[in-house]
Image (cartoon, rainbow, N blue to C red):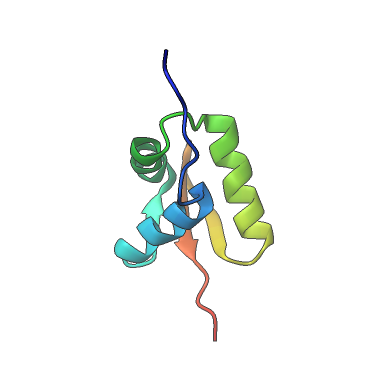
Length: 78
């Protein structure tokens, strides 16, 4: 029997920590792979909705780089 446990740190918090460690910006595919190591049950749809929530909340900015690549960066709060 495989028991699932609650994560002590939510995915959005882990995502923001990873961006801070990488000097505030990463490519979305690298960020998704790194986040999947911590949260293996996270899918692409969940990742995109997480990015959308953080972008609407003013925490991150997502810009298109080239075909299929996006740059995710932390918005500097003043």
